[in-house]
Every structure is written in C-alpha cells, then in structure tokens.
Image (cartoon, rainbow, N blue to C red; front, top):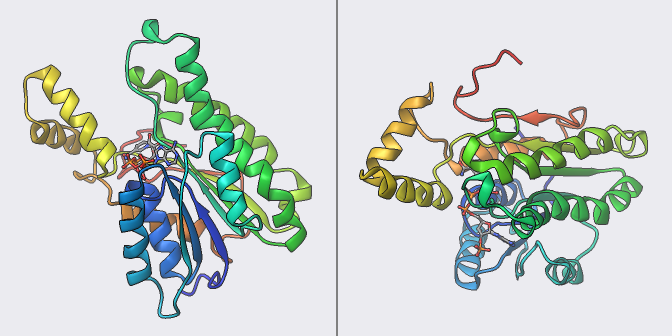
Length: 264
Ligand code: NAP
C-alpha cells in the first residue's frame, strides 16, 4: 500500500536505536525525508547511514542532529535545521525503575521533562504550522504502562499518563482536527531493543539468573510468545502517519502481542 507521504518531512526523536530507529526507517522506506535526533553521535551517524542505504527507491534526505531533545537547547538545535515538519515522532529514553520511596522531586521533574513536557513542547512548536498547511501527523511513543501500570516504573506511569491526558484533549481541538492534523500515542508492550536488554540484565543480576532466562520468562508472559520487533513498531508508526490514517486521532494504539488482558 502506498501511504501517500513520500516527500514529506519527519522529525523522529530518539532515533539512533530501538523503537525510534524503527519508526525512522519505516518512514524513510516510504520516501519521507527524516531529521533524526539522539545524543550519542556514533550510533546516530551509523543509524543515518543505514537509513540512507535502505530508504525508498527515491533517495530521501536524512539529517542527523546530535541533541538532547529533553532540553530547550536540544530542541532549538533541531528547529534550527527545519521548522515545518509534516510528521513528528516524539520519543526519549524512559525513566529508571525503582521504589517510589526513593524518588525525590528532581527524579520526578526529570521524568516529567522527558516523557511529558518535551512531547508537549514539540507538539506546541509544530501543530499550528501543520494546520496552516493542511496536513500533520504526531505520534508519541509512550508505553503499555499507560494502560497497565508497572509498579517499578512509577515515574513512567505517572509522566506518560499526564501526556496521555493532555493529548486526549488537544487532539480533539477542531482547529487542528479539521485541518488534517492527527495526534496519536503508540504504546509499546515488550519490544526487542537495547533498553529491554539492559532491563533483563539488571533483573537477572538481582534474581541470580541469566539475561536470557529473564528474556525467556518475559516472552512466555506474552500470548505471541515473543518480543516485538522494532520494524513491526515502525510499520504501525508509518501507517499512523499515512494519508489513509487521516480520520484516526486522539487514540492510544497498543502493539503488545496480546499481553494486555482487557477487552477495551
Ligand atoms: P532504546 O533502545 O534505549 O533507544 C532509545 C533511543 O532514544 C536511542 O536512540 C537514544 O540515543 C535516544 N535517546 C534517549 N534519550 C534521549 C534524549 N534525551 N534526547 C535524544 N535522544 C535520546 O529505547 P527503546 O526501547 O527504543 O524505547 C524508546 C521509548 O519507549 C522509551 O521511552 C522507553 O521507555 C519506551 N518503551 C519501550 C519499551 C520496549 O519494549 N522497548 C516498552 C515500553 C516503553 P542516545 O542515548 O544516544 O540519546
């Protein structure tokens, strides 16, 4: 299916690895030009080279920007490259796990900055331009923890739920929705990325097991009996950014291999 977005410009945050990279690659595969953001230069440049090599038949522009998207300076560096994005995928690292008794105000502010306020700043910076041009797609990478909170990820549960509530209201603003701007959240379940590998390693150390044991245990909890692939996540993201998805807004899409047990 032709998604009808070739030639558009996308900003993909947290794009050198994992889910962000999956989204950037799927968009580039559709002929979308991509500005990709991450802090570490080496992985970012390797990811950009990968995208250029595997983009659509038509060559696409791929511009890596080394920046911390959770800072005002980082966002300024991105918007210095380009302001009029058609597509924005918001994403940054998730907060650390832990016990809520250990989290002080600073820990909460960091989590809110990364997983709630940064996406809101990015949305604010682009949506009016999108509405004026009559097309816009925002996809926020959040977490399945928004629907099924995970106790040790309280910082994530809280910050991302705040973003979800904000998006639920603003996506339905007729000044945006009637002008071709859609805003949706994509909630990963368990995907095979560096972040998850790191979590299995630290869980294994605590449990006296191997990271492979932890991974197998987690895979067994999923009805699909496997972790998701970043490219599967990217394909859903690209569809949410398509012309065909123009009537889908304010939704929380949950790719999780059937893990969430609820009807709704
Ligand atoms: P990942 O494999 O660790 O990749 C994270 C990417 O974001 C990297 O490219 C990283 O590069 C970049 N990044 C992190 N902090 C950044 C910042 N402040 N500014 C710019 N770029 C930044 O993580 P992932 O598994 O893809 O997860 C992506 C998001 O989904 C996270 O918020 C995570 O909590 C959430 N999530 C993931 C899963 C899963 O199964 N994987 C499940 C639920 C939720 P640099 O470090 O070089 O900046």
